[in-house]
Amino acid sequence: MKTENILATRAHKVIYRDGDTAVKVFDANFPKTDVLNEALNQARVEETGLDIPKIHSVNVTEDGKWCIVSDYVEGKTLEQIMEEDPANLEKYMKEFVALQLEVHSKRAPLLNKLKDKWDSKIAASKAINATTRYELRSRLAGMPKHDKVLHGDFNPSNIIVDAEGKYHILDWSHATQGNASADAATTYLLFALKDQKLADLYLELFCDMTDTAKQYVQRWLPITAASRLGKGIPQEKELLEKWLDVVEYE
Image (tube, rainbow, N blue to C red; front, side, top):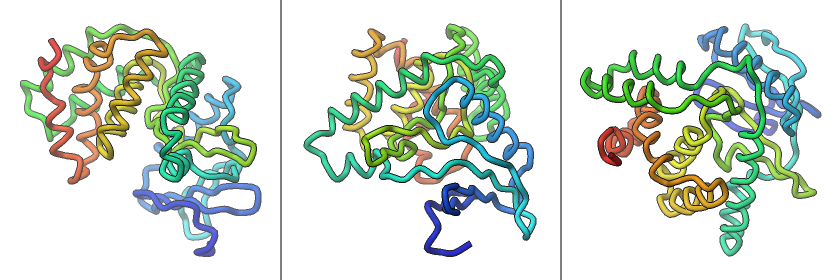
């Protein structure tokens, strides 16, 4: 792997270009089950007809690391474009939300259920006390069940815009099926961890474009914050803990 071919470096993985493909190489100790689950998620989302990079193979490198090989998409991330052209930020954000709504319009019945995934994460969390875990799991159990495709990490850095202006969605490792407002709460939180003004703009547009009450999306925030707290990212801890107040929006 040549350094100049590296596209991105993430926790536990490196993504590099190899001709017309992108190769995501995982750390040697990264769980095989997680690699195979990510590939399976992406393959199932492919079947919905969404414009996403298609998987070519799942392999093991010469030095024993698992990797996923998929289409390489030439272009800039939507995050880069937003930063370079702030005058048109609202336009880009509307297109971003419209793309998320297209994802939510799809169904993939074999994807894992979001409520099951989050319930397991919260139940196993050592970062949250037992009383709060109980309240969060009770709230989660009472939230409406839906079966929409959810990206789970939908943010502008995971959108590639090609030379023709077409949007392509990357990184389906967190894909599940469930409630669209839960996915919106996750996206809101991802924005808020970086820029509260962008988070507020996003939520305003999502609620306007879907005719959804802000309070409904906000009811998901403590739950998604709790699920993310388990990642143990120090710089996020303070903000995530702030969202754990499950009665804040009662």
